Length: 198
Image (cartoon, rainbow, N blue to C red):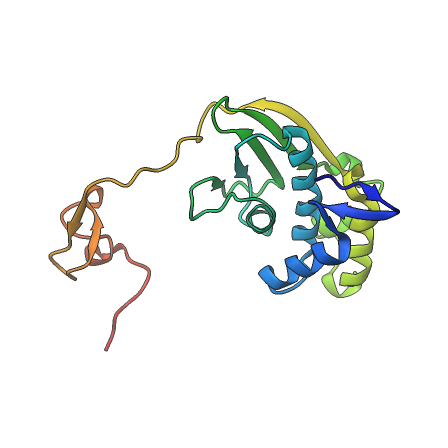
């Protein structure tokens, strides 16, 4: 499952490029450059960790990269195998969930300087209307791993999966909620994200 060429055909995450791009569009809604780049990052991390490792994933941005992990691996937010940090760093790690060893892959800006379209896009140095999606995708497909770096890591924090605790029934709304939130759910405490106006 590498971004290799078989019979002259580029494979990314074990898929021909067209299939890879179609899966991205079907899941994400469009061929987002960050997700395409993330596919190459994930492809390399998968190759480095090997095929027989039960891996968990950590992604260091909320933008695009989590979707690459969810499309091309069994790691999802819902099953707890994917952790997403809002650090706004374009990096991901795959690691053996038992040994806590793995590999971190990131978009390396020093290498990206050799691919001006990618560097300028990521750093927002060029308005979107001046850099078409087609040109940007072509730059990513040409650059592949040349704009990425990797390192071996040992995960030391944030690897535990959240366990469900005690559940209570909220005296305010009657819904089930985690007891650690207090005497009522967060919404009834005024910390919710919506107003139930009638």
